Image (cartoon, rainbow, N blue to C red):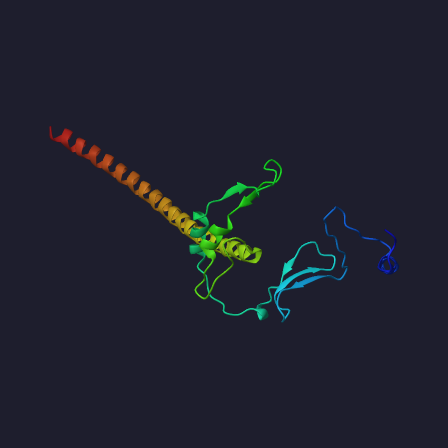
Length: 195
């Protein structure tokens, strides 16, 4: 196959030719980045910024609506109830291509409805929803940790107060013991005099 006009044009614009690196593969170079938009308003999609190495989901608060609060503790309970396993896709080498995590059916059952509508489906896990669930769980765990730290500090304070009170009681008990010994000695002396 010969050199096409497109090949010549590409080589003039960019001397580093970029071909597919494997059979049935795809490789592309866009130094300005990628924007994959999935609606006509260009407000939903993902972006790979120039020189970036990971997709960023469009997540601007100005592009969102219908906010509902969530219960982090309920999310933790749902996560705790979800089976967590290792697995591989059918047809993958089970020795070299293993994965961790939940099944889409379990994730959807736990988090697929929020009171307004449906979130995802039972065969896919949207990474933004997965991240959202994780952030909600992390926040709930941080709240638990903060509450436990406060309780722990209160228990430590009470323990110190009780230790001080015990020291005072020990001193009083020692003083009382000395007084009882003195009274007993006095009683013995009085009894000896009377005999």
